[in-house]
Image 1: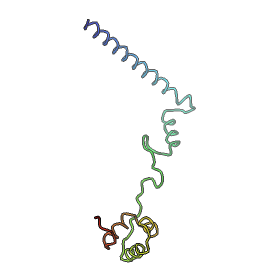
Image 2: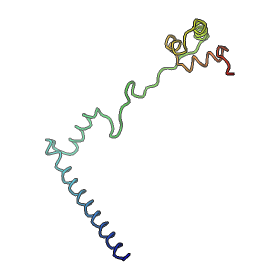
Image 3: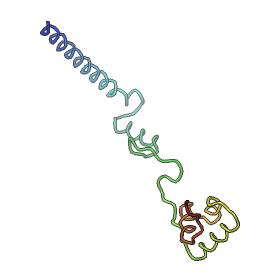
Image 4: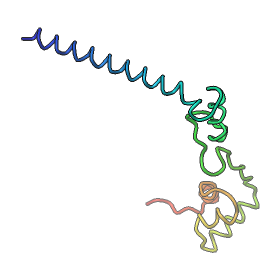
Length: 123
């Protein structure tokens, strides 16, 4: 009984392997004819055309939206910037508004506020 099941399993595995091989052959055949069907003289010409359509990107790479991986320029935190942050906090502005007005990051504003003792201590 077990041997019959094992034989059936081996036969199924052989059938799957044969199907996989036939898929590979069929796919290879279709791909080899593709350049001519699309009007290209060679596979290399088709690949060049695909690269141009893809914008010169390498396969598998997708450009990020926006600045495409460029880092923002680091802001210089000068004593003048710290004074402006201090004045803005006293005027009641939010950290996000201060950061936007001065062109620095919110964490920089928070660090300056902490340095100047302008942060409420947790209770």
